[in-house]
Image (cartoon, rainbow, N blue to C red):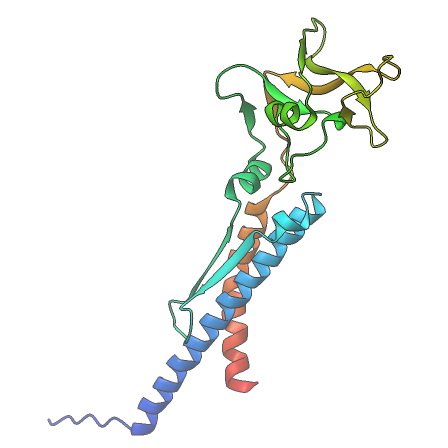
Length: 210
């Protein structure tokens, strides 16, 4: 008995074309999944009231950076992982040295960098000293002897007679703070992951018959 195997060149070409279609489908699906997850995370952050700036810290990168591959992948991450991660997990925050956490009150204003101001920065900017006030039945305070301006911020008093001078609470002192969980990034990541097989099939069919 003599066996002979002939490979039809058309079959080889068809297989090569099918592999190429698969590479395009997988790559397109991963890019779509990555873009969709980035958008979902940004939307969550904005809806949680955390601001467009933090939302824009969410980025994504596709691999390979160019061309198509059956091993295509996408990476979605934040350029501010500590802040985003804290709002995603809702951790218990304690002072590093075991003392107090100073929580700015409305009269404190904001840092010159736009974030949360510290007692040290507040004293330097306002030219006032903060005074510790212990309260047995509530959180202790850091207060300043000055006045509240038209925006409700604690500032130095210019009055020589003491008119308008007040003791303004500037910081609330707490031993620890439980940050509320405001994000659920895992939920969106799981949805994106589960959608990948369907995206691959859809792009594969689209490439062949679209």
